[in-house]
Image (cartoon, rainbow, N blue to C red; front, side, top):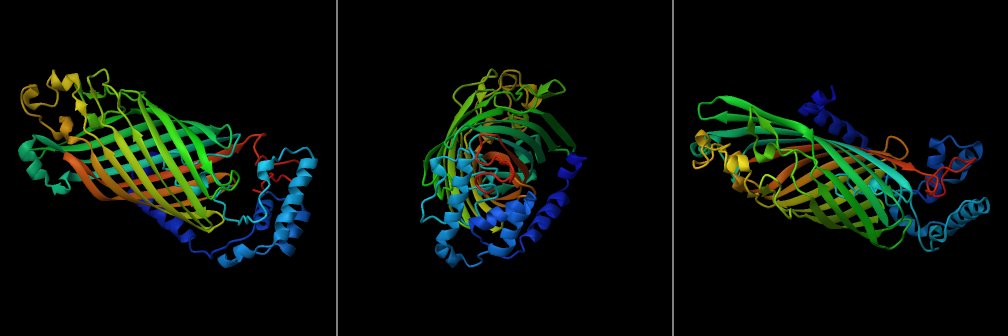
Amino acid sequence: MLFILLKSRHFFCFSLCLLSCITIADICVADLGSLIAYEGTSKNLDTQFEDKKNSTIKPVTDLNRLSRLSHAEHLRDDDRLKSNEEKGVDVGKKLTPPDELRYPLFLGLCCGKCGGNMPLNIPGGGTPEPHEFRIKTNLNWMRMVGLRKGIHNRSRQEALKQYMIVPRYMDMFMGNLSVGYAFSDRFFLGAMGMYMNKDMSMVNRAGKKTRMQSQGIGDTMLMTKTLVYADDLLFPTNQVSLLLGVSMPTGSIDQDERGGLLPYSMQLGSGTFDPFAGILYEGSRTPFWWGFNISYLSRLYENYKSYHLGDKLQYDFYGMYQTRHNLVAELQFNGKYVGDIDGQAREIQQGGTGHMMGNPNRPFGSNLFDPDNYGGSTLDVTFGLQWQPFHNHILNAQISFPIYQNLHGTQLEQDFNATLTYYIEFPLRKSRRFPKEKTGLDILGF
């Protein structure tokens, strides 16, 4: 049933329209006391907290008043932290903010530095607080329609003069599951696995339509994120992180149909261990969040079929605006460069798969088997919304459209890319956000 819904264009359009309606709300900025009161309401705190919220906590709706927030509020916060320390709660010196800092309500959807502060499709997005587990599941649908050569569209009729059969469109569905754990404020380790389903429609010179399909487990990714700079470990407004990892070849490169190897684009993995590295910057000034990242994945050697995919350079710029305590709108520009395929699969080069008449000395019968028809540069624009339905839960809906494509050779061009991500954090007992006894409120107030 879920697969049918995902395959419907109207499902995504309806979902995005529904989430867009939620954004019609007043801008609300409040101090840290309001945040405590809000969380107290969600956790059904005792009457004392309710009375405090109703009598003393008032939202601050003027951004210019943030610089004039009462120092007394922070003294009360310090008294609360000291009280917790006297009860045996290990707050730590790093949790005591300087007097000149003011922490408004909009600290992202979870905390000052978690997944609610950056788009969840960006590598490294969603690093939890120390001693917390993260689980993220992702459903992605990419539709590719029409042919392009370089920066120009290429008609199907023109392509069929060169090849015997060419693709009409391709649907690719991916489901990702990633888990991670933050060992400290500075180090995070995560792993991601994926399942893929590819469906391509083809047409030959006689107008006969055929289909190719492949599905299965894709490559698995291991990643670390190391914080190299932050102006504040608790509520950073500027931070820089280093990403390091490796993509492991768990995806099949032996996908075939009727005894013939499927083309490169229908395979599920790379067949090689591929290291990658990146750097990520995140900035904020409530209610705005912004950042960029750049990463490079390298294909260092040939797989057992005597070819390797092209290296990939990826860069992303994003801006986010938090309209209310549980909703963030986002705008991204996502760029990517992918190199050509180097070498050819033995079945293609020696066995003649994909060549006219099955003869390796004759031209390719389809552009999909020619390694020169892979790679290129693309730039997409992405619109998204993040919503927090429950405490420590985030739902992220995104849709991307290409604004620039310069493809090597003759390839299918991208039409759109829709993504739905669900993110959950699990604070352990060592976490600063683990609910404390009696009040049920964590040390940080959220």
